[in-house]
Image 1 (cartoon, rainbow, N blue to C red):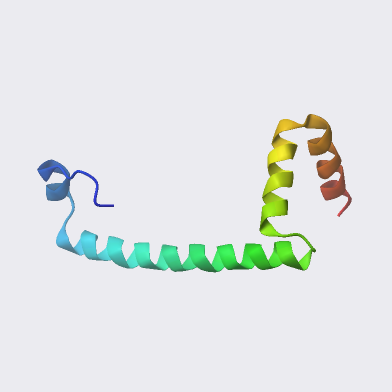
Image 2 (cartoon, helix red, strand yellow):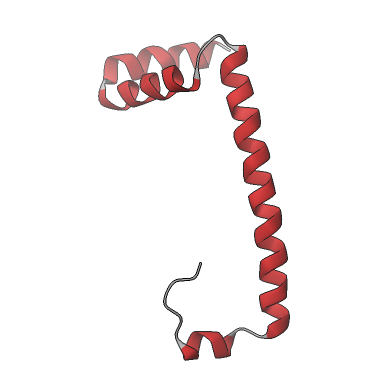
Length: 77
């Protein structure tokens, strides 16, 4: 967030908006952290490691046959 700041951009954000943004940013960060934790738990509950899940996802993005097989499983549920 501490990228190069232009005085023009800073002047367009009121102090109230800056405070609102900070509060929203903190909440979004908390939500993202909780979601990441929930996703990791869901993966592990299915018997995979996060690394295995990510490898399979990457392979499915490269292999149309694997992607189709996964999509067929998803359609069955």
